[in-house]
Length: 74
Image (cartoon, rainbow, N blue to C red; front, side):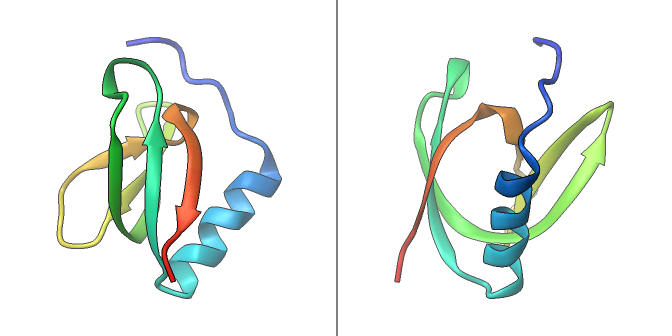
């Protein structure tokens, strides 16, 4: 896997805000994972030198530097 590229603090803050408000979101992913994924952010974790969002009801982790866009679904 590629080396992790840290994300902007403002993007990290946006993810934390969405997690706190339990907002369902659509994630557009880049690279080999280039698909849209929907869910509610349950947690933001650090593992193996990279940061990930964990979606509610899933063990799936999405690496923050793989997120091209995030759209809140209201």
